[in-house]
Image (cartoon, rainbow, N blue to C red):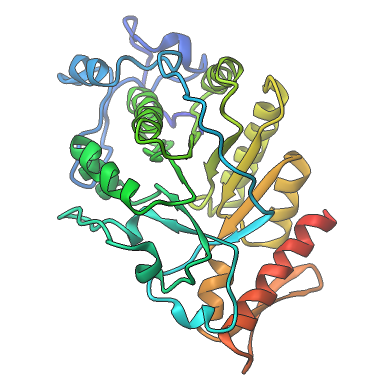
Length: 330
């Protein structure tokens, strides 16, 4: 996820981030990056110093994980929509994940009163909140995050991830590094509420992967990390992310369990499993297809959806089992 430079950019001689970026990363300043209602920060931004102060710099080592261990996770967890109670009429999944945008409204930042009622879940189902959302939502949350997080804590999730502030290729590296740090600060905020919190990891260079490895070395209480791969549509983007993931795993100081969100295709699932020894996968394909009466089946190595008259719950259960089988056979 390295910075994508324009043809004529030259790295600034006073770039404050040189120690955390690749040697060919010259994307210092803000150039024609369109953001949805929020400020993008570059080396040339008038507010850079203010943002650096608010984030306590871009180093990770000033965030210390509390000893709050995330309990064990299964190999596959469906990501579910709101109002999906018909999926659970004859099936009670042990776990589900739900994204932040399903729980918190975009503008007013209203928070749902009950996860069970919002999602139509059986009371026994454990919910993991993935704090993944559109840039506009998570940027709206930032200045009032403590209030929003207190309301999320009242929902008593089984676990929660930190917020995945975006690291886009087209952003200047200052924005990328600040967003990596802001995400880790939300991990700190959520842990202070005694929530079992999973740090979400993004990187922008080998140097930032090395910084994460160092942080995990010093924060041995962290036993699970999360990575959101939902936005990787192009094969080239996926290949780059997998190469980066291989490098990251090679420098980790110890075994870590990964919560990977996004992969749907069988070949992508298998590639992730080939890289990571300890992993839980989550995607919305199984639940969203089941809600429309489509069951997922493996056809010559490809996952396809097929219409069926089976009950919604049976469809979801079968599609979840399909992913379990792929994971355990890889």
